[in-house]
Amino acid sequence: GHGVGDQVLLRVAGTLRHAARESDAVIRWGGEEFLLVARNSSRAEAPSMAERIRSLVACQCLELPSGQTVRWTCSVGFAAFPFLPQALDWLGWEEVVDIADACLYGAKESGRDAWVGVQAGEGCDPARHGPRVPHDLRSLAREGALRVFSSRSDPFGRAEEADGSGAP
Image 1 (cartoon, rainbow, N blue to C red):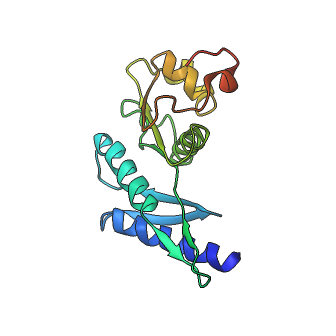
Image 2: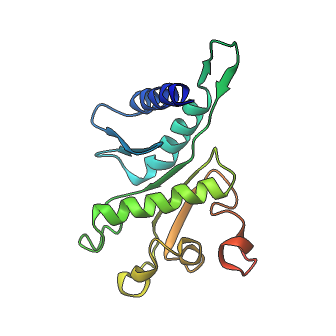
């Protein structure tokens, strides 16, 4: 019920605050989604932070008055801002949040209890690839425009469902 759901949300918020640094911000973004803004961190830190969050949430449980134990997991999506350091004005923070959100849905489609993140790859060209971000992350990764980081081997769910090609 709603009471248990509220307790779970409070536990998740507390877990995120525990995983975050003092300089970070934890925001309830909507419904059961949270946004963690990791200020002054390196892009290289993102996968380990995502795994820390995933594993800390998975360890949580809530015992109900009936004696039943409720457990839950989370899916995490991430992207860095600025997205392409060589083109600071290419994407605003809202667009980068959209990219992280697309990664979150990729983690959910890959089976949940997972994390997925992307960074601009060496071949990322705002003029050529920009219109396809964040809607075509799988193909952009195949083309080398994006680097994908994931706790799963197929970070965007089943390939044949995603683009009809059957290719990863």
